[in-house]
Length: 465
Image (tube, rainbow, N blue to C red; front, side, top):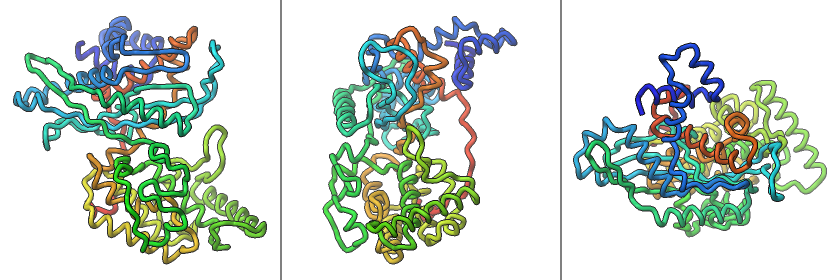
């Protein structure tokens, strides 16, 4: 594949072009862009072998070993100029770290018949993201956007609703595939490369640990009645530490914990039993929602059709971006909001964290919360971060910021299905969708695509890095 073809393919992917759109663009400069038939051959190189696919009306999956082999080969091809400088012993001792996870989402049903009674109103996906290629302590390559779906590779896509049983079934399926993984051997320019695969999980923790109550800590087993008693020391489940910290959901859940706290500030009761207290909290919630809408433009805590509510990552980021305004609107202590902001920025920084300083800062934050709002228990997410955060970080194979699960969120397939898939057959449609996801996350093509500009901000909490 020539550089001209690769460049054209990267433009094709980056602009989300269809065949017709590409041909219109090419008609303005045929010397610059190759014909679509040539582009099709380049696209075919971006997919694993056909025999590694298994596609039905309700499922599309790829053999994990074949998918990792293909991903590794494409990554090594992209790093060709760097790898030529390695010694033979380094070439045969490379290690590719990846994170994997699973997630479900809802979507509108597609107007296409199915032979059985299945429905495509729910999608459940398992996927992995390559994070770092290393030789010992020497880093050869690191994913520049570990929280983006740009490198997110699909393992299996199913039209099923996310439940505890489905999640546990998916975890067993992926873990069984991981247990049989072998090194990838690749010959390039008369040099042989051997790459070992290390898969780090970012699973749905409650389902994986069979924690049935959402108000119980899956790490130590503490309940909501015990969260505010910092003198209680419970044994930690060492296996649960391997799940890491869900940094995307942590930001959202901490934002929601502040919301639920401020709704009840006037009654100072965690559980509302009387109709009078419920009416007061309901009225205060409406006042706070209107205040957020008027002063920040944010729509908070409003249910959405097919989704939980409007409390998403964008809303929570804007909330913690300005702790002064957040404290003014919510009447919650400024120092508490600021400390949570610092903790979140440190967790998502991707840098190595000073564990003792972080542990002390988390404990001081917990003490501040208890001293101010003892009547309202910490949420499990807040307890997990401020009490167990340093312990979880210490057990992580990579920097905790690299293990965020944002990239593993079930990707929205409406655009791919509408613009890039054949409509006459469900299996063909599903094959086209998974191929488009593979194309848009191919390491060789993605490495050539420009990284979207990111807003730079002053990082708080540098003393912990």
